[in-house]
Length: 419
Image 1 (spheres, rainbow, N blue to C red):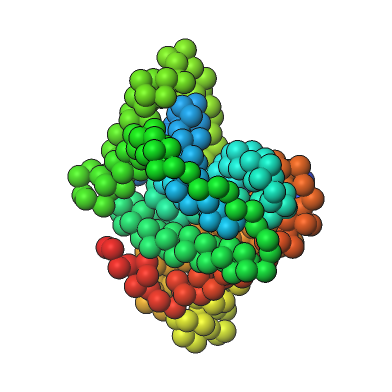
Image 2 (cartoon, rainbow, N blue to C red):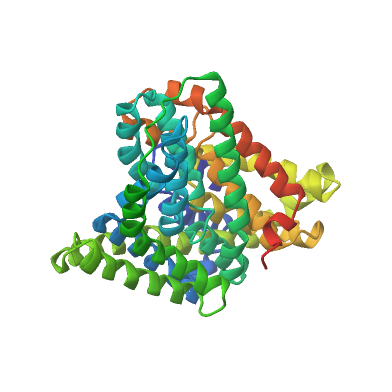
């Protein structure tokens, strides 16, 4: 009955947080253990009673302040003036701009929607096909939940009871690997297709662009520097980043006004509440799963199929790729971590940080996996282009991401080297 309720509500499009809470309530009522209702609200509260979750609204606030301050446009121009004169230069610019914005936003769907509206029209004006421009932008958005700060990693750290700092630092090398593979893919495609080539700019123009964008780079520098250097927690780093973004918008770009702050804080509160309600609902859902011995049952089945840590990781990657195509990254993470993490650590001896990186990247890739990855449809809708054509041209990027995922799965040091 619990599975039937979960699947039915998912098919009719009910918000995933309500689905999780309803499924947990269904299990309690149908199993006859109504005494569990006394602890239902307490379990939801306990799921939110974690200091690390405070980083989420602060990261969301940074993204809102950045959007209202013109910071994105300056970062794009910085990337454009230095490598825009290469063949296919604007495609490189797209990825590098996504990487810089990823270090501030930390959300895949938000980044895909925003960057599609910014980059696709400009690439089309310079002679790129609209579907190719959309595909590059969509996979550039994959970097958002990997390069710190990452809301996905924060949620995983809370679920796994790990230090948020360790998860954020573990995403740096995987993010750089993915960026390098995407840049290499564009270079290889450029040998076959006649991508446009912009004129080289004078060094004076480049220095002016650097001057305009340099203050904007202080935001990711402060966030990453504070976390990696051990000067503060991710929550404190996010607070510093938000303060810096507000100062830049008010006094440097001067496009942010104090009168805008009310609307910005309201959007931040609404978007943060959506994520945090997911965490609360997942807390009670995970509690019910444990009570129903679901993790133990799944563990027994997996042990009969996967005999080594590598085979376990490959099996998990295949399952999560399918899960990620129909459920967004954070809700999917909240659903699978309580089941799979104990198996990974207790049965196969896999490091929880390494496992978290692989699982998170895996689920985010599901957003862009043909034929039903929701991220591809978000990008196609924002660019007003056929999703089928975007799926076709995005296949090379999908394949190299799968290669990167396999490398991350079999080589734990790629995630753990900076810890």
